[in-house]
Image: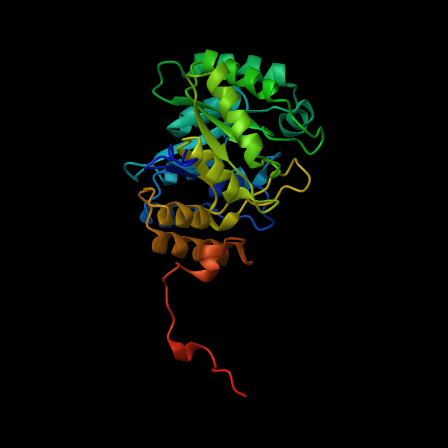
Length: 316
């Protein structure tokens, strides 16, 4: 039996670099710089963004311009802009700014949830019901995300039933798209299978999105496992930016360039033009002011050839 017979023909890539990518960077980009980077990604064919987070500016200063950023990009047609919100006040700000969807986020780990949003998991979930009521009839889509879904830097292994219980709570709120976040790169292919199969059993109405970090170098291996299970939604960050400021050892997301390169070489459609995405990755590198982890931006496309005079000929 072909283990990859269920691989989807097309995949939705959601760009999270402007949110997850920038929240932990030493250099804070201006709103204008973020707009320039976002427009370069749109020009490459990216049509879905997790753009920012409506959290306390004191907690995450790099995202303090959430409202200004959303409004500065409102003129771009046919792009879906989403934002994370931790509470009702964040949802009110997102609604006022004109966001397309809000992402309610909670950790599967009690310790990480306390560090991330200063409350326990039950309190977070209870607050989401009020947000759902606020958004009812607004036309703003409600999405969900579970951080530390594959492991926690404080608690270690996370039981799959804890992830399933939260997923059911999201489904009860009317959420239909749920992201499983690999906050500190603890996901492995067996864990990907375990989580996806469990979600299909306990919350079949949910469409999963996979969000991997490349902390231990197997982010794309986890993507391959997700693809083999038919998962067709993935989140990535331009250049491989990223890292949670409330989790020790959190490093970058899988790079958008590397992900799109893999999918393109597999014949899977994304609507994203790789050469233009590489240019966006080069722009991100310039704006951040340091080399970024993405491999494809460094190496180029597989058949991007050089003249034979580009390197010296061996002698002796």
